[in-house]
Length: 356
Image (cartoon, rainbow, N blue to C red; front, side, top):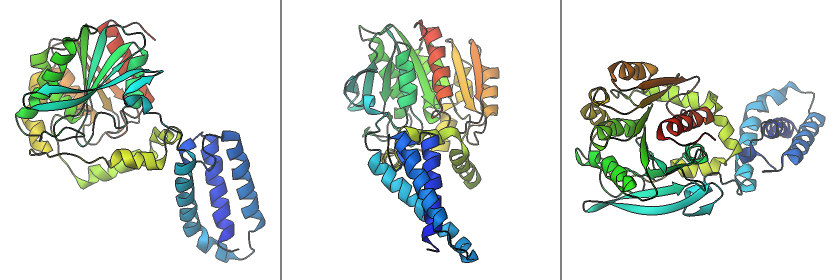
């Protein structure tokens, strides 16, 4: 009873917390919210009834809580298997729109891509370029759904050395992919105006590409001017993920689904990220842009801090907007609904799509 009581108390409290915040991915009852309250209350009351009078119960509190957390994560991954917020990022027809898979020719290689077309298209499209260690679909559903809801077609691609792209990421070959993708997008009869959205490393590549490919609008998210990797920045980013609103992702997918998304095998990268960012000269290329530019940075970003955005805004000669998202870090900026809607509204404005 000394161990069982704190275990039930902890599990009950966690279940009540999950039900209260509608965190279906870590709930013992999955999508059934009100039964979740009942189960959580029952577990808590049972634990309270079994609570022994000995103070030894406090010695078991930490291991009991750890076991309870493990249990709710495992059971939540089983009961929440029906959660699939990113389903529309697979080929098929969905309420959000149609998804088609393509392999865009790029010399003797091909760029894996998904083209998402909204039910009521405005003939405006946005190409997404992901960050380092990322891919075309990972944690992109909120951003893609927001863009689709504005009538914007979305092309999301795997850059060299990432996702399904078999080409190694090497200099200067990697700089050709985004211009090729934009040209492919422009050539489609159902697309008129084209925007480009680059995230982190993809932002640096997008700034470089935009000088040549000339999109109608460019947004750079958390794009570093230089990259300096430290253990302290990694620790800070991990802490920001744990403390940030990213917890609400557990209302849309399970811990197992998050792990599968993060554990996608990556390709070959022959150029160090710090070297790549340096060679891309983001400041120099931003100064050459002629299209509207939106710079979006996280207030708590320790990898591409807001000061990088301010320096880019000062260097830009084109119409430029700088947005600092409160509470967002490098890993959580794109996860936040606020960021998705800010970007979708901006592209809708500059690409001529109607407001939602």
